[in-house]
Length: 159
Length: 159
Length: 159
Image (cartoon, rainbow over all chains, first blue to last red; front, side, top):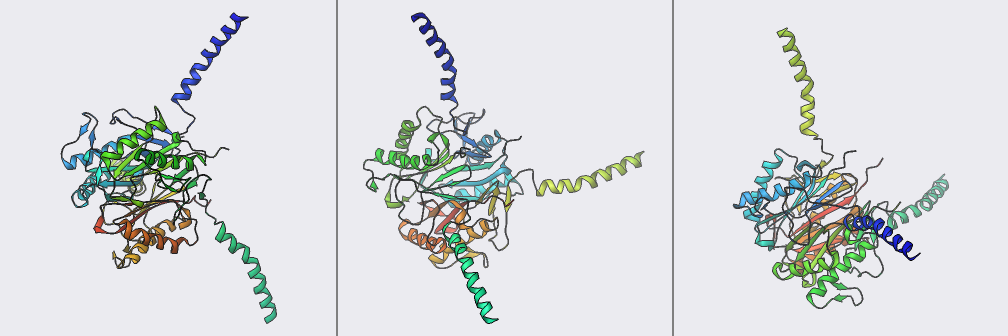
């Protein structure tokens, strides 16, 4: 009997193991955390983005080069890299730049960096239409960076 | 005839009264305003949060203790309280921290408060996954506070 | 035969022309870019707003008078104009102020402009309910303006 119970216990543990793993890895949340290959690596308590329903939310992106994991050099190149980082994460869920529903752009010098943001957006979006944008000058960004862009996208899953 | 018209007018007013009341009290809006018990009390022209469709939007939360209605003392405790305030409002609509699709964190000193935000998030989210985050240093928050966190959540109503 | 091919080519071009025009004007994106009549004119790489699914996203609005295309004079009038600009864009998609799910308000002086924002919101929303709001003081807005408001709205299309 004891042996039987012990056998049952082993059986139960074996049965539950995958469930536990599943519970830890894929929580009951319907929010999908994004970590596409080729993207920068989050180094702290944040992720690159999420999909929830038809929307894709990308974390504020700065001009970190995913190849070297360091800030791109040159101000315009840095800004372009920030947008490219956002673009790659959105694209991993089927959202193109055209699918952006809003951008919030944080710069540390409005006069100096807003024209660069405009220039980069012209290159990326061409003749438009452009997404609605909010642009503000803040005191400081992480790593004393110059520009951070936060994008929200709409990309209903293909059924 | 005059009497008849006048009677008709009274009838119309009587008929419209409940409609007007309804229009003022319960607007046709499908946005649900949240005011869960145990949460802080909004003191101005804002509410704690809304549900709209599958999403829950929480107002920027600071470290106000709902018990005393004053700012929690101690920087780390203050930051934790801000996140707890957000958590309670989201939970009232069935959204856990795991259901956060994005956080925007405003601090008044990046070097000083970002590490505290990271620490608090580690305690709350454990091994993750963490939501995408945008963190910026601004000039000032209301009440000269140190950290404000704004969370968006995904929580489809249970059908 | 050559004539036949050439005729076929003309036919194909004629056939494709409207498709190309359509591809440029209405991209395969399901994001609708908003440009309601009576609104301010975007002058750069941004649009006034988007609709995506049941949500309407309005760009950060400042107190530019659409009649004159210049900033409204007087601080309170300026703030009111910013909210009115947001309101007009939201209304073009059937969203009233009551349908706002979140506001983010950027001011360049918390002590000076927050009370004006409160006053304007009281006039616009009356007894409420008010939308959840995040308000922060930033270093600078475009055109050295004083207040910018960014609104998100919920307005399921009438079926």
